[in-house]
Amino acid sequence: MQPAAVILALVVVGTAATTWHTLRIGSFPGRTDYLMLMASGCWWAICAILDVSSEAPELKLFYSELAWYGIVTTPISWMLFMSAYVRGGDLPNASFYTGLSIAAGLAMLAIATSNELHHLIYVAVRPDPTPAYPDQLYYEHGSVFFATMIAIYFFMALTTVRTIWAAIHAPPVHRAQFAGLLISAMVPWAANIAYNLAGVRVFGFDPTPLAYVVVPVIYSFLVSRNQFLSLAPVALSAVVAAHPDGILVVSGNGLIAEANAAMRAIFDGKPLIGHPFSSLGATFGPAGRASLFDDGELVRRWQRGDRTYEVRTVVVGGVRHSESFAYVLRDITDYLRAQERLQVSTRLMEERLEANLSLQEQLHEMAHRDSLTGLNNRRILESISHRLIDSADAVGRSLVAVSLDLDHFKRLNDTFGHKAGDDALVAMAGVLSRSLRPGEVAVRMGGEEFLVLMPHADIEEARARTEAWRAVIRSLPVTTAQGMAEITFSAGISAYPDTAASFEQMLQQADKAVYAAKRAGRNRVVVARQAGEASEGRLRSV
Image 1: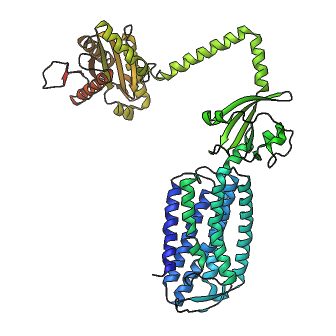
Image 2: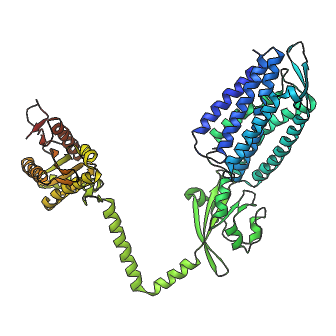
Image 3: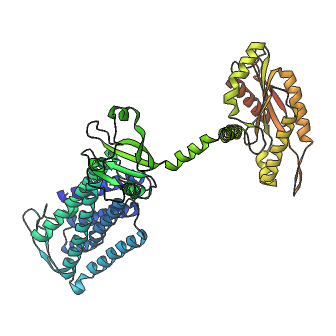
């Protein structure tokens, strides 16, 4: 197998692997054009493999013509991807530009495959054998070839300049990404220029697609080491530009690397980027570097004129002695003035405090209360389980758990609609709520499952009450458009320390007892086996 074909195969495999890896990242600026770049590079490389592996001149010419789709769309996709990446977001009308890229590739493909009619791509093609590569061809290029190359070189040069400019102004932590992107484009570009202008060949073949072997290598390195694509380096600039707070980034050499419009307004609109931080005469720089590394953020206040700012200082980068700093300035003048006015009125302050306390109580209630039934939700168990167990141990009385599950609840929803299901849940919650004794807790565990905790009770008492609930709920059918729908439930009972050694085990036993009731035909109560009972059954139906 030709060495060139081996290298080209590595290009295809590496590009496919890199693409698969980056697809798992999710969305990022220029994602479509990045995928187009990878696909176009693979197209070009596959055509080149077929070209290198063929001996017949007609086939070699045909595959070189097919390659023109990738030859055109690869650099265009790179330019579109870099424009989006540097911009920090997809280009306006991005799908339109992607469509133009595909259209340009298809147009060149049509021109190339019909070259025999007009000779605009290749004026002449003739054998150019060498001892090492006897099947080598020489292509004499036509006018459309040179026009296309000049246009591609021009726009790639513009994109390169813009990328270099962005790299200069990017935080140091992101410059490795820009360097990798530029190298991955410059190596194939340099190989293409050497081929077109100097006739340089590698293994008797155009070195451009061979040079693309660096692309998956560099992109894989960037993805794995520099969070390439998962944090778009200049996407931060788009966020910074629109942020209402003033944001200033100072590089390790003391120069201002980024300043948004809000920050420029604080300093009377004068240009800041590229100027020394010291020229601002600001006093909000980090006073103690150690505290920044220990705590990650320094907050202080800074006065400029009649305005007061809260300044948050964070470290950008991870090298202790060459770090950059980001300063976020929030104008808190109006807040401070409002705070002073609030302090004048003690009564208003107390009312605000009471309102906050009331809100906290409401939020706590909402966090532990089921909105449909009004019962506690399962979060309440985290705060009461230890207290209930300790109480049972202290007084020597059992803590009984009754787990209830409405029978055929899914069928009720499917047959009569979800309103009927909600009405059944509300009815069940009402039966439980009306029968609760002081200290008892009713919980909606989720779906059609309920739990009642009975402190200082016993299993027989709980069984009798559960049977009573079963009779009551059965006498309260749900009214639906199709008629009355009967409600029944299956229940399981467990108790600490009678049948369980812990709160969690008690709930597990009660759930298992419910499943046993379901298996036994539903609409019944099953009690977990008590310690000391015969071992032939862990659960007993009553």
